[in-house]
Length: 564
Ligand code: GLY
Image (cartoon, rainbow, N blue to C red; front, side, top):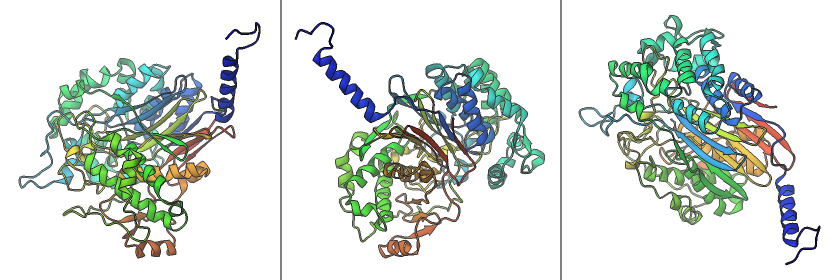
């Protein structure tokens, strides 16, 4: 078609109108403000300081991860790992950076069994035999090199300062250190670092970690070779081996982070982007949302809602145990598991009036874990629209409790996230299958679920710690976001939890009133109130329609969410 000189062609005009229409529906492309929500005020401030110094959300992710390693040593650290879900605004690139720990090459399926073939839980929880090869330092290098604007020497500055000069001990530190006192005391270097004078320090005590400051400085100046090779690697390995562990220099040299395509699903016009295996989070969230999508709408409101949530959680967690593990070592039917038709089949036997019993196996009743606040989560949105949702862990509070002398690195006990004996519960009561059996170099299955939601209406960035309860908590946060509830509600609403086995419904105070409890019992659910709240959700909402950014930190924790 010939164009009239000086006027746009019909095709161009149509394109222009289309772009304008999409832009007006989707709102501005960049947010009016940046937001950060983390579990510790010092980490939130450090994140903003790096943004102010010219960093982007990915630089801030390095800074925050490193600061949390210093000020929340019971939840995450250089001796642990995590998942960083990234969205780069410039090209929409979305990826999950997998910095999950890997089993040492000398690991084998019988590692935690006694002479009679019985699982010995303490071996997978306390001391260096429980520790897998850390991924956090490698993730820092990858983030800085491929996504950030600043060198590690800059983004690690705040953490180095806090490790060297000290941070004031808070109530969470004291509670977790008291909880893990025996494990920490068993390691002289951990005791010296975390228990000055051999005791849990008092509130406000300025805790300095000079070895950790030196290790962070080595990372800042030498990059990953400052951790995975050279003198530090030698100290890590010799410390582990002298205390009965099985690490080798080759384990450290061979550690790599992996970029993985996130799990993507749709729910009520929202696009879910969440963690891929070796996290079970995204797969289970997709399954649960797909199941909820086919339930009659009256089941998702009022009194029946708790029953519906429990029944979708039950079915999704059953698949977790049956199918999921390390994608580099196990073939998994991810496309089928996340297919809406498959979910419709899973929930076909849903009975509004009756609980569907789980199959309780021998020896699957777990010890009750006092609470589920270990692990940490943070969410970031920068002014360019870059997003990070990151969940990091050293597993149990203070991990394995073991520090190799001269390193300042508290090691994880993530090996407990393997199914040490298929069919036998781990510390969270999770029962695993062969897909998550221990093998050399393997990544253990996780529940960590850093998540984005996106629609024309807005963007949500969220996640939480909490062991096996993480996925159900994130589900409940997603549902609040989709309902249009304020972000404070996403993080604050009382929660319920069911994980197939043990077959019981845990609920926070306020999650079920007396009538709700009676209705659940009448359906055959076993109820178990949890006195202390669970979770520590950190969430950001960019409301594209209203042109607002809001952030919230879970009132159960002592974190801070700021918008600037
Ligand atoms: N260690 C907790 C998790 O990865 O799920």
